[in-house]
Length: 233
Image (cartoon, one colour):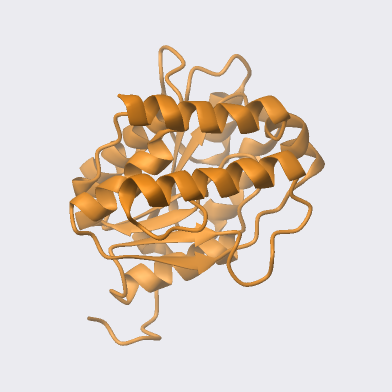
């Protein structure tokens, strides 16, 4: 184990960013990460806008799906590419500006210190999540309970897309559920494959853009529906 406080070099991290119709934000998100020295893989999940072009112009490595496959498939595509390029530490990061780079670095630091194979962010640890729509909060709480019951892993925020993992974890995990059920699938694989994990508090930035794009009641219900269908499969 590396000693706690051992310096983490952002150049050692590969950020995998799944993106679907994130043209307004993707250059800013990818650009901030690239400026830190980390490498960025944007998986354009068959967007109908200029997401891929903007990510490429920002300096990211871009992979384009020929059809829309969902977030789980986009994450797996990006993780596979990073592994092929020799990545030893991979961070999964949302494309809509909700994640803070500082939080990603803290998760990566925990993995770098060998405190865990995979470190997951939670918006429900420490300071309570602010500005989160009531329907979203309810769905996420229900999803966490469902995940705890079906996997036995005591997670508080199963559907937080901010995670850091070492090469061993990235090679061990294999996402087969394309859509939102992939998050609970990942937690289940942590237990089944005996990966060391921890949760750390992170802040989710609920902006006008992200609230307009992804926080509708229908999307909250879709999380629960995808979880249930994934469990049945």
